[in-house]
Image (cartoon, helix red, strand yellow):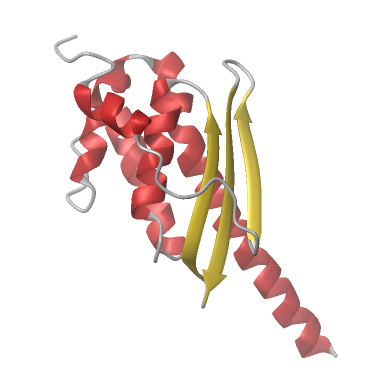
Length: 151
């Protein structure tokens, strides 16, 4: 492998602590864990017009999961469900060994993980949590809209 798994960018991102650990007025909270290695991510989101207005995370895990959580915190504010889905697909492309999406060149720091399948879930975990949080919020919004239409 030509690149180190824990490159300088991953180490720096893992040390970052963007976003407070909790939001008092969160609209959405999701907890995800990787039972194989013990990584855990809690995301709390405050939404405005179906977009992320504020995000907090609590991440306990390896350097890869912590670096991925820092990326989520850095990118996600202002995003709606479609942008989150695109971001998640971009992570999958990096883990498949493909070039980074030009919208998120910073994700290239995870390129060395592509060759180590057992570590893919460490990187995916925060991105999966983010997608599930927004998908859950969208489903609740649709359910509320359907209920009021029937009344």
